[in-house]
Each structure stands twice: as structure tokens, then as C-alpha cells.
Image (cartoon, rainbow, N blue to C red; front, side, top):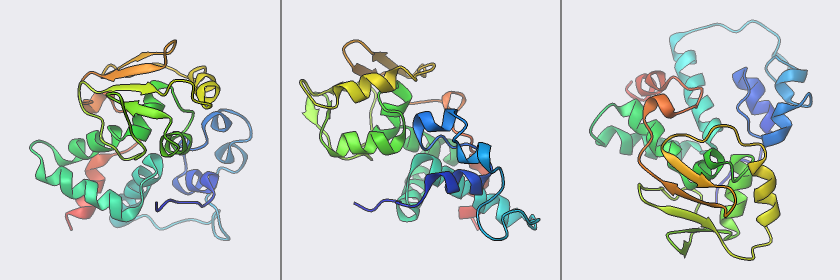
Length: 206
């Protein structure tokens, strides 16, 4: 499985804002953006020339890093979104939001997407009663997500639920039984990602 193993705090610093890639650590004073609010590297404190292309590229990179998706896979999501009816940018965000690793984070069953991917890869979750170990699995309306009985990761998941804020309206969760249901596809106003999807569409449309 291809994955990004680079320092996550540097990714947030490069984008100039918190992407909450490290779960609880991002809420403390140890957060890389809080400690050093400039871009990483020798020239991180220097002035950067702004251009239309740079804004579009940074927005695409921010979306990739926020959802933990590599370039080839992200481009595949864009192509799929462009073939669907409706607004391409909103379709793209809906596809990314419905990834199983992201759904676990939205439900509060994982503190970060990296933790969610590890839990999924180790086979701790089921969808409609069947074990799923693919983080990019697309959750569909009506899917029932549950943790496997007697899994050793039970306490890790319960600890993550304590950090949970508001659960999106397109999801339903029971933190006692650690089960959830996907009610419908997310609407754009319900997507909390700090992304301007139109800039990504403009970049890929060139």
C-alpha cells in the first residue's frame, strides 16, 4: 500500500494552517503550526511570489494532505468526479468524504486519518457485517459500520470518541456500541474540509 511517511507537521506548515493530521497533538501547544507558523525549509520565512497557478496548486496539495491521498489516487478521484452529474468540485469532495478512513474520523472513532487507516488495515472494522481492510472503501447510504467484537483496539477507539465534536448530519453514530450508519451522501455545506474546490477544478482543467 502506497502511503506518505513524511513528517506531518511540515505538511501543515507548508499549507500555512492546521490540517489536524496528528489528532490530539494538533490541539496542544506542541502543534507545529503553533510553534513555527512559517513554511519549512531554508527559505520558509522569505516572501513567496503569488500567482494564479501557485494558489491552485497549493489548494490541490492541501486537499491531498488533508485527506491523506497520494497524487495518482487524487487525480483518479477527480476524473471520477468529472464524469458524474452535478458540480465537479462538490462531487470530488463527496468522494473524498465517503472514504472509510475519513468516515471513521467524522464519526469520532479515530483521532486522525492515519490512525483510522491503521485500524482499517488491521481488520478492526466491518461494513454491513463484512470485514473491510481497505481505507479507500467508499461508504454508501445505508451502510452500517461497526467495530469487530472483542477487538484489542476497542480502548483506542473509545479514547478517540472523547475528542469528538459535532457529528455531520449525513452520519449517525452510537458511541456506546461503537456502531454507525451512513444516512446519505454529504452536501457541500456539511463538508468541513478547509478547501476551495473550484481552484482544484481550474488547475486540472488547464
